[in-house]
Image 1: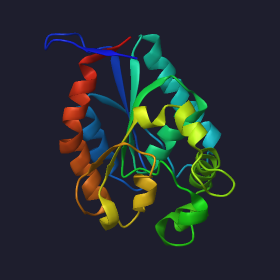
Image 2: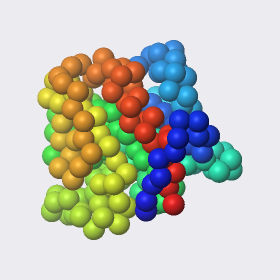
Image 3: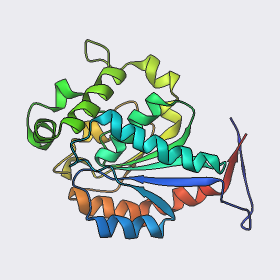
Length: 220
């Protein structure tokens, strides 16, 4: 797959940005404002709702279908747990999402390693939908012995279509191994910081240049 970078006056309407919210990332009014500033459509992941994870995926698929009707290419911005939602969608619907930007995202929960304590364990206990997502991703991305399932990584071209932004060990909610697993190639580190504050910085500052480049590109 090759890309041609278009000129500054090109029509960028072929790209649809969808912002996938996390459980405890940013207040609704803040994330909505940021989505608007990026010309992105916010998806209400609604993790507090008792819906099961399949229902959440179906709601997301309905939104993706609406954008595809207009011939748009889909780019996900996954915030915190929204990164895991984006990953799960990619594994369920291959070749639909052009790129996933995961911001302190739970793209590889690897539950046997990371659910022994801390905030992730609390979320898994209190939020069945969140736990279901983490179980699905762990089962897909890892072999029974816990090793990374390289065949899945290659089959879904995850190294090509996933970029991570992480604030490293300073994040008090998402372990670094979860937001920036070993198989990721396109990784950006923004320095240590609290979870929500780091995500706001990533959305407002660090992501803009990358998005501008993708908006100007057309893929064969």
